[in-house]
Length: 234
Image (cartoon, rainbow, N blue to C red; front, side, top):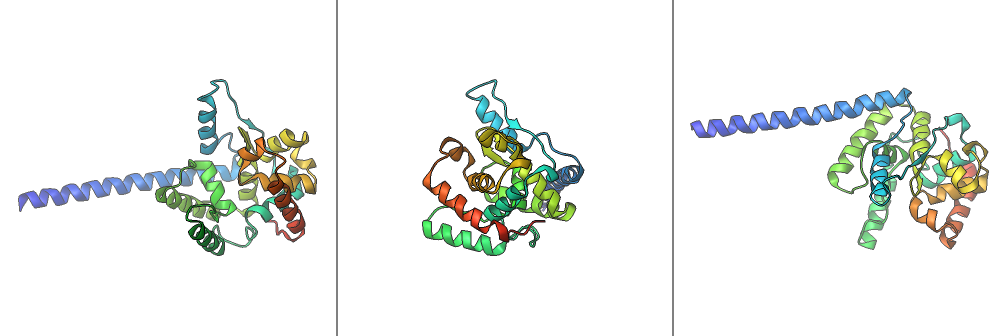
């Protein structure tokens, strides 16, 4: 009986400690979400991960990243990214369950993960705080951070952060660096066709950085361009 009592106390102590650790982690995430409601991040977890990968081959490697305010980002790029990444962004509360269901069905048919169904808010949660690994634990944490983002920030701020920290090529982050890298102009000057091309690159930015003239990218960009007038901005 004494041994059972000791085991029960040990279990309760371990469970309590684990709970406190998990709560502390969520408080840490939430504090950063509140901070980034007002402050512009100089880097993200995903950027740090990519930089570490680059420095395995080149110790002097650096990322290309320049923050630009929301008002200095081309409206064409905003429309193109909404069309390409999350058409219901302005309306949902962080999750597009219809897109998730379609992605699950597509993955089931293919027998592998070929579509994710993540919203802009979910992608921002991953980019700010998490690595690119695909595990159930990471997806659960991504969902919690997404809820925090939607509760603390308005849609415009979430979109501003996303456009500035999204990966757009090898060591290339944010729309300002992308516009200058691919077209030699600032993000504010992007035209409709250029914006559609950048939005089309988002699912595979490093691949398209090396393969800019693929037939698929051209066709996908054309579809984005045709749908841009219907995009609903936050």
